[in-house]
Length: 211
Image 1 (tube, rainbow, N blue to C red):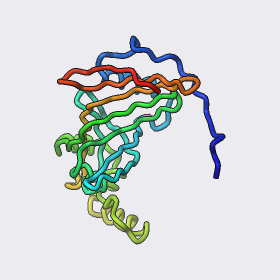
Image 2: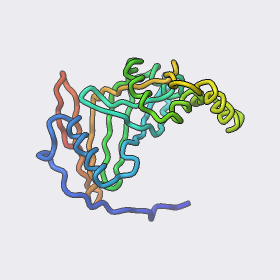
Image 3: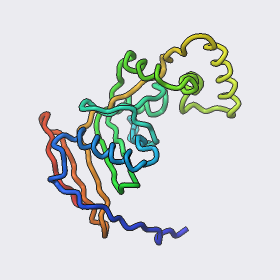
Image 4: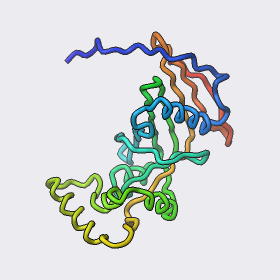
């Protein structure tokens, strides 16, 4: 199938060095809020890329749950494929694509587990269905049918019918501590504006990149 004719022309406003905040986490927060304001669908969704010791990359969509100057946090089953690859090789990348604004933000850094106490604070705020779902799925494991999940869900509903759903020992969060953050603004004629923050000796260096 030849799909070479599929093409969208970008029309974003100029993105200049003077527009950048010196701190990349504040710049990310600025773009994130602007994406929320224009009601970008799944504004906190990003592609998370990992690779284990074999060097073969994998990517999947995860949801960012909070971020600050220390990093970007997401949650998952800690026995999943992504978690096993992070244990082998903590270098990861996160890619946000905010199509409504014709923008991308890419984060490269090191992933590390957050504390159980920090994970519990978030887990306790999840909807009960999501809490039960965390107990049901052996994420990335091969299963025979969906009925396996549905039966396990009913079992968990009975098990935790009274009281709060506890935090599973195999569920938690990861913080990606950034080493590079790139901001990409779509522009006409594919001459996009790109700026990269690169950490050198605890200071951020800002560089313009060719599109």
